[in-house]
Image (tube, rainbow, N blue to C red; front, side, top):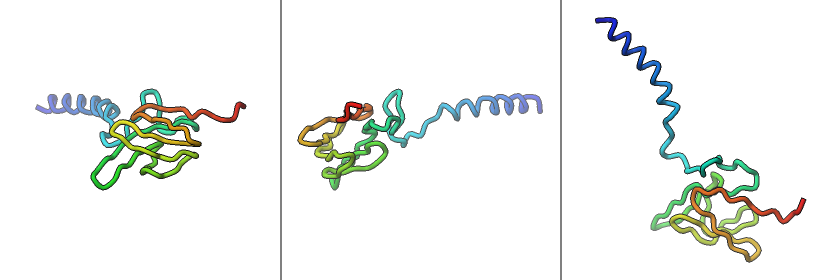
Length: 109
C-alpha cells in the first residue's frame, strides 16, 4: 500500500513545478506580445483601461492616468473601451490596448 502512495507523491512532485511555471496572474496588466511594460525607453504601452460611472483610468507603462493628465509631453485627451487618445503640440495619437507604440523622436541623432 505504501508503493502507490510513493508513486503518486513522485508524480505530484515532478508535475507540480511544471504547472506552477505555466500559471500567470489573471489580474496582471495585459502585455503586448513580444514586449514587457516599459521594455523600450521610448515605448508607450496601454496595458489596461478602467471605465466606471465615476471615472475613466488608463494604465500606460504601468502608471495610471485620467483625462487631462500629462506625461512625456503628452496630454491624455480621451479614454475609450479599447484605446486612448493622447495629444502633443496639437497632434493627436491613438494608443490601442495591448499594442506597444514607439515614440517618434524629434531628435535626428
